[in-house]
Image 1: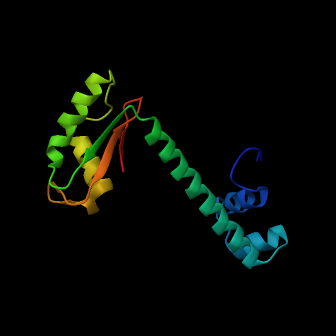
Image 2: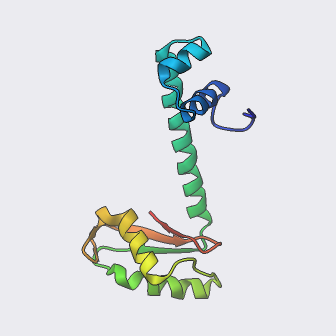
Image 3: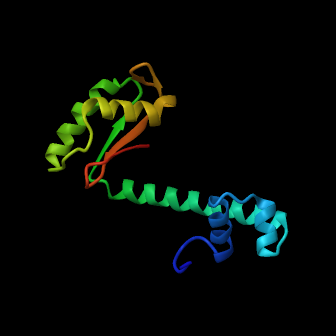
Length: 136
């Protein structure tokens, strides 16, 4: 297993690999000749490191996004796709989603910031250079 330049130690990666193969923590502990408590710690830290790396990648994508629109309190999310398509045209971007797909993604990710069609807590929409929609 190649571990260079990752956020996981070899031990963390080994634990995750064995978990993916269906072993429980006690079985992994026996196999690695360590305690179940140590396996639990390794697994928890590995998952935390993966989550941190995923958040970092999402942040990097948002920072590089050529189109960012703020959805303000009172905005109608049904108007968001038109605004996104207009901004995408100005930036010469091809959007990967249709209008219904955009609305579905907005509802899925920002549902707690909506009441019906109306924005009740501000959030942003961004289009990446490859036309993907980010909601944050």
